Amino acid sequence: MYEMCVGPEKAGGALVWHVLAKQAAATLCGQQLRERREASDGERARHCPDCMASFEKLMATTPC
Image (cartoon, rainbow, N blue to C red; front, top):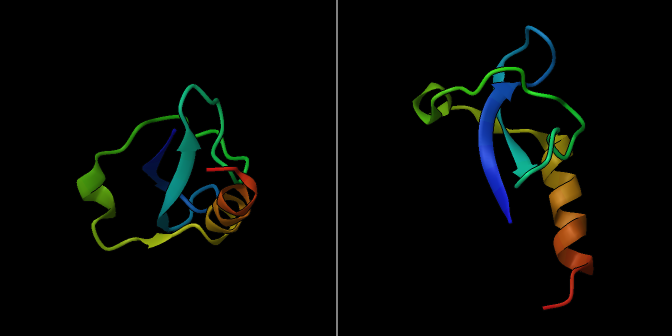
């Protein structure tokens, strides 16, 4: 299972939505989010392009 979480795109950067596997220490783009943010902080944030590319590859290769 995966969840979306809000965090900076890069250290000190704009907020984006990252993809995080349950029980994982880092997002799919490799970031370790040090603090959880409220979902409302990312209401208008875009999606992390690196996380979304990784997620797309995972979904394309994972059997149903």
